[in-house]
Image (cartoon, rainbow over all chains, first blue to last red; front, side):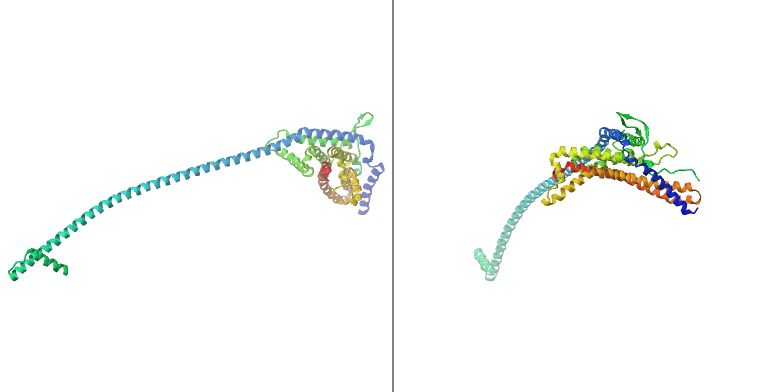
Length: 187
Length: 263
């Protein structure tokens, strides 16, 4: 037997089985089995539907829903905590800014006070100094006038003495003074 | 010659009674189809029971898995139907998970040597099952559509804003498209499961035939075996995809019912 005849015979065997079944008709088209199939389909499918509808699907859906709610809750909570943290941070920043402003206020106040004190003290000192200067100036003026008068007197005395020596006649002191003042004014 | 026999590609779809039951003259026997419907449903119930036993704030692995499924279908319903969709969510979810489980359990290989009655069976590979599911969807669409919109539900067939003469063309098209919805919905799922399992069984059948030929020819069994593996992977995709498609189309039809008056 050649290989080809063997394969052919194998194929024929398979085909022969097919022919047998075909001659008996398709099992699908045999109506006698239909009521049984329909009955058991209704039975199994019905039970499965009832269990799915009343038990399994609500349980699975519930679990998924619960998880979704829980996650949403947790997210809400987290955002709330974040908001609280932000609030606390803002409050801290506010307090810090207040304290800074207050510190600056105190510093400015103190500086103003010190400045005022310094200004007052300076004004007082200035006034005292001015007074002293004025007094000193008045004294100087007085002393100057004194000195000038004394110089003139001495000049007149000297002039009288010179004139007496030259002409043996002493002019009156008034005349001498007058002459001196004329000369000093002219020079 | 190794004495093994490959089952024919159609044998896997045969309905085999396990417990004969009779209700008012109607045969409602517990069959291999019923068995796998019960297995798929029980597995879902067990899975969801474990997941929701302790609904924790921080979900475990199983709870995370069902929450992903829940959010997936929930988003689908909300995005497609809108706010009205909430009340249809349990139905769409049950539909999706039921079809998904039925499709996937059908891909579990049968245990060799066990009686054919408990071999793996895909309930959704039978047109009557998918047609029943499609009719439930369409019934909900019709009942809810008329309850919500009254006679304005018929505006579904006549979208506003078209030139008058266009309605002569559009209205028949819309009516035909609406009437073909349950059929396309049912046939799409059924045909995908049916064809996928036939291809799987054909590849597997070739492997068995080549192995039973014995000798060096057995080596040729590798090619269909790899094909069967690849198709199995594809079928896992199709199983999930068809469950999703069924749910999406159900949502789209329900959305039509909810918003028919706005058309």
